[in-house]
Image 1: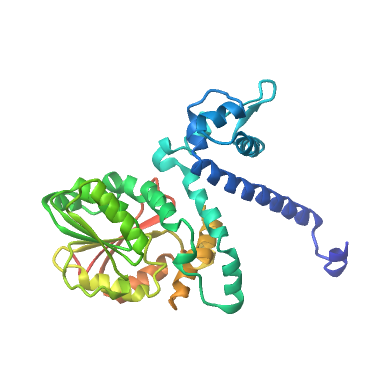
Image 2: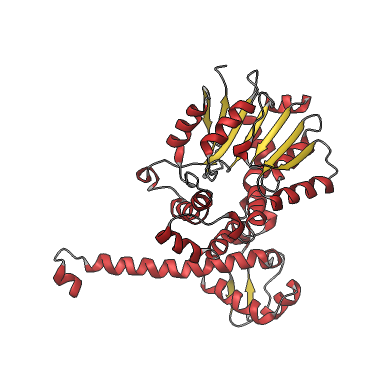
Length: 364
């Protein structure tokens, strides 16, 4: 009533609808955490192979504590993710749900991405401080970041490399088969380069990342697969000083969170060979102005990722703070400023989140 007296245009029905939406969001936020737990404990994978079972049977199969499993199952049940038979007191994960929640689903496993929610929550206090004091939160404060990103990349990039991403550039597969020099900037845990090294033994691959933890993981994976045509090095992308060294340079979701993306792009331009060199940049599909993202299917999530990770890690290094949603317009402008003349932007039909840029030093 107070709001109505102050503002005669106040619409009570709209207010009640908004309150209802907030309650829905509150419930979904809880489910987001529960889905992350279900993925990390492999409960979804276990349930996908089980007939209807009691909480005790599920806990024993998963090797977990029944009391925790039961509470998790109940959250999944009221969240309409699990089916529950009250007479038999059994739970069942429908096959139509399992296809998006289990590791067997590979690229369709959306449960992987819910780990970002709990990961971001660990730095909420520091982000709140940044709102008052400025600056940013460094990579070192994010728990499990490289582990989660490696799994994320494995689904979105590595799984699509051979059949979808490489064919975007005509003749690239043939060139890799014959043997070329390739570099991945911001390689993280190295899954993309290790996959390429395995697929194309005649080519030579290198990965740079400034994280010692990520490079250690990338090197260990390469050694476990006996890959001799790939190497990884701890290196800040802003310090790359190579010239005309690579036939192929890639960045996968790596440019927008650099402290100095302008310098990084210029370094990539310099390191790329003029004769036939190709730079493949994958980055988030978005517009640079928020008005162009009002109907983005992942808009709220991606702006959250930006505020609580990609933007802040750049600002922590005194960087530009582009953020996840720097967008096509800004990306194209920066690529041109770096010197690239031939720029193609492509999309994959199955990929709603990413754009793929194919760049060369001159017209072809």
